[in-house]
Length: 212
Image (cartoon, rainbow, N blue to C red; front, side, top):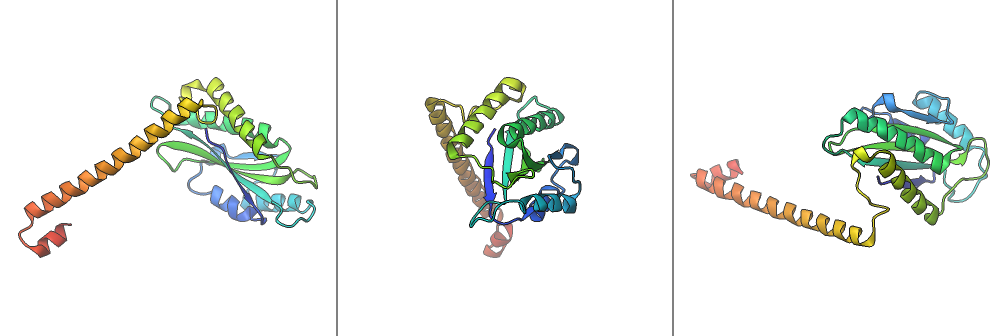
């Protein structure tokens, strides 16, 4: 579970809603928190009207685009993983921004993981002040959410990341480095084998170019 947060200084609610609500998303898992609007245009209008209540401030945030992802592990059905991720997203919203407006879409365009895109208003519903978390608060939120996932959904087989010990993180980085090196060597060997076979099969330089 790796929450990521990106702030936006412009009220680009429509652009983000359009990206989120695309062919990549499963509409059955759309989330509408403190937002009665449905449909991209109405959602954009609702978020925009709420943002107009905020006091004007140079370089102030209008919204947050945040992503929650889980890996898809062997033995876990796609449907169950989606149901669990929806519950995780709802818990995250409750912990992170219970009074803000949130629109969420679940994307399934990758084979190895699922993820939610969340559009979060910078201010709470009908409030003038911006609601933000400090770096320390967000780090704690990530740890608390990971504890929640590991305890409530052990069948998802998620790895410790934010709550991992220093030694576990060191081993994880070492494994990732080994995987990258192995992948690089594998690609190099594949290129060598392709060249060797092409040179065996080609009877002229022009044929060699065609084969390659």
